[in-house]
View 1: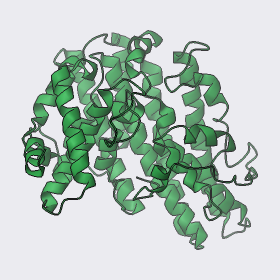
View 2 (view 1 turned 45 degrees about the vertical axis):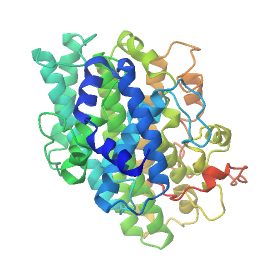
View 3 (view 1 turned 90 degrees about the horizontal axis):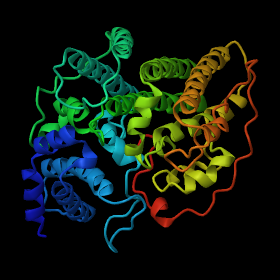
View 4 (view 1 turned 90 degrees about the vertical axis):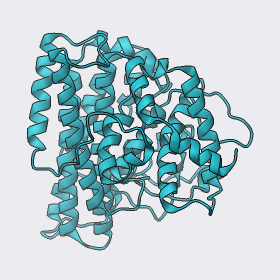
Length: 441
């Protein structure tokens, strides 16, 4: 297909029609012709952008790169998990995996983590997204209770569950009231990709492009909203942790303390977000949509894996698992003598009057994240039947049990020893050839 034809086809694609269809039926039940058209368009667009044509102006490139993020998800979802790709075409695992299921690439675009922004900018974007997502979710639940919502209305929560959910979301919203806000997205999804660019486009991405469940079940929508909120909080924590480590390396102890304190605030918020799901979703509701998640596993959540590495380093028992997940294999590049996670940086510090606030702030962050992992493990025990395989091929709760207790400090507040870094295993050349290696990309 000619460059001009590809560009025109992308620009003429009706985004509103796609969003409306996905909401009405669920992405699993999209018209095969629509999904096939999107998948084919992605292959053509991927080839075009890989060649970096000089004939495209900057505005066109921005629109095409945004469209590529959404089209890639449908290209992946159009195939069965593990299905191969055509020789010479785009590479990467396909099927219902975490990245296309949750549209995390589009979310990261809205958060600004795909650009080399400062930790302050990334955190601000994450807080804006968190505030917007909570407000949007609260509005959705209120409309559902009033009988005014038009999509995602199968298998509704009980009145008691809805009441508890509204109460918890209202408390989250109140806590976020002082935070910066995004522009309102408008009452309907825009039809053109270009309307999802810029500051106004960030809220439109959050409202219309990322929260597209596979089914029409209400509680799968809730599950996705918790995923997106957790992703946004994790990205903010990661940004501030990376900054804190950098300050520690240069002796900027006061700045490191501020970064760690901001990370802890978001880590505590993560707990309250997860509790909305834990306290208001029944096991029956979860099992009612679980099959629709297929092979979409939190193990494939790159932001969470990256955060753990910047806190503790690459866990020796995760090397094989990371290498086996193509989306996350690049994280093994942290197995080098130059990389220093927070735990090893703290071990190089003597606890003095000057550094004691650093240790105190690190302990608070460590405790908050441990509480979240403990809650996450409890969710696995609650929602996954015993010995049932998790969606990522691991044995659910038993797998999480092996890692949730990994911490910087022990129960008495003493540093755990940092293990000797492992040698880097062989890494596929495609991973080594990534054009951008950023902890937030």
